[in-house]
Figure 1: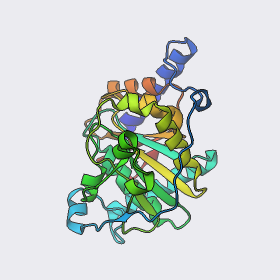
Figure 2: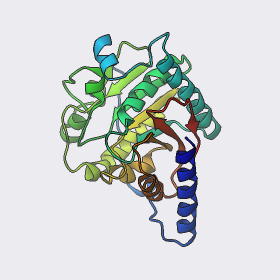
Figure 3: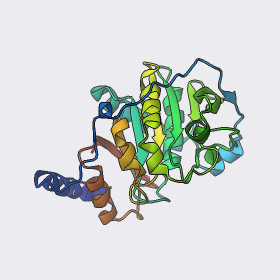
Length: 271
């Protein structure tokens, strides 16, 4: 953990120096500058699915286990994340990583499930990795419709949602990969949807499972629509240079913390 924290600290220093020299690329633009039509989301029962314990265990989805050291790790992460979010009144979090294989989707699904077990809020988990959607695979179900159907065919958003057998947790999946992902994420339609998902319910936390920062520009495109970013790195795999590049790309975005995946240490580092 020490080497990762040192790398993050060094990367943050480099980023701050770059910002002072006006060399960093600005990634935030006021959402209000883009005209966005209102999205109507009518109350409607989401589709129900069943979860297989064997599939969840195979995919390392452990957060709802009552007696598990791994589940306890996500409870600890949940508590620290909620504390950080409450301090700054954050409601929406993008989860990303430097590259594929770092475990961002595993973290996103487990964290969403652990948050939902806390009775004080509801949770919406949105698969926003348009080119490589994996949330439904990790949970072991095949959606009949999804976010892509809303984007491309105007399918009502409630029809695209999936209710899991976990209280207070709903998933907005993607049925199949979508090309031109960054272009779609920057449209007024998606901006309006992000605003609606955030403001519809006061007790809702929205978790976006996003692509890796170094794989494509989707995260940078969508950043103005989220309150904070959680960066996932894999112990022994993620390179220091990749972390530097990620933090540089995030610019002055609100990186609320880092998760070191694959480590035995129960730590969540605030950025």
